[in-house]
Length: 238
Image 1: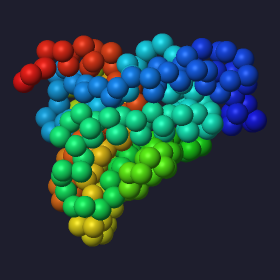
Image 2: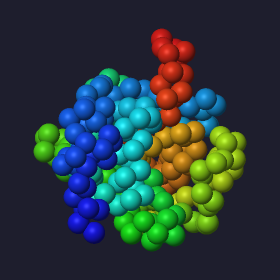
Image 3: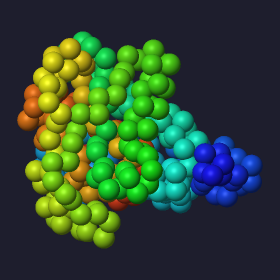
Image 4: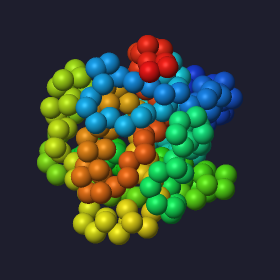
């Protein structure tokens, strides 16, 4: 049990006596936030930025936190997510130029209740909270707004192609009651998640928030499929 909270070795490469070694940490935080685009790009997907490709040690670290309950990784992963939010706000149109003047609202993409129960923790919400703390420490007003809900059962996305993933989550998300006041008093909405593969879940989350009147400025993820980084080269200047 102690090993779940404080791993005895690096979750990325297995280096002993290290929650996350410097080399694996640099894979998460040592690069600028990059705009990523899945192919095909689902309708309604907001601008998405990521810290790193979903490969090598990054994949191992995310799985250790999400699936194996290595909770000590929430802090470095939250720092990586906060770095994406900061970088995207500087390199894109900027979060501050959109929506009301309240704090930045980090809205985590929800997981199915059975998945959260099986893992024993809500990984997405935990990372959002860690990122918000990092942002506030950097002088950026931010708060977590866990307002998205799954309105119906969805299948596990693993093993589904892009078309099947869109169909699986289409119309599945809604927002909690009473969010209109939050949208009026808060700042721009940034959807956050640990990973983007096809973008289907982020597009559905954006649809639900927009339908309720929320000002979606973009999305930030820690990692994205490698091809999403490669696809971005074809969009430069467009």
